Length: 95
Image 1 (tube, rainbow, N blue to C red):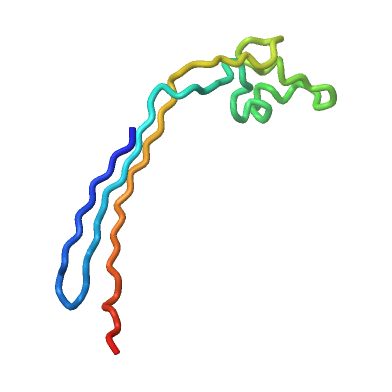
Image 2: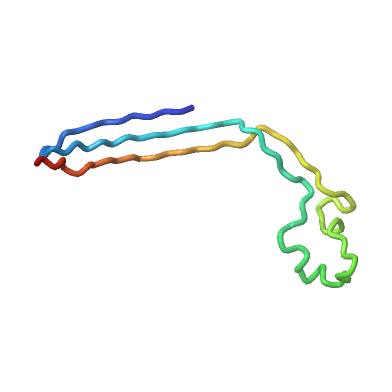
């Protein structure tokens, strides 16, 4: 959905103020999330420090151990854009 509204006003001294609101909304956007990602900082947690670094398997730190990424696609994304746009041009030069 896109929407906008604007207004112009002559404020004198050869100056016109133009103000507009512009917006855009989107719902039910497709996105993908990983259901089995390694929790942030899990490889640095003290409980996980007993594992040797050489050959360290991150799959053991995942919520479902032994599996890699489990990507889930859904239409739950959204986006919003809101903007106030104001223009006040300088007085025109008359010569």
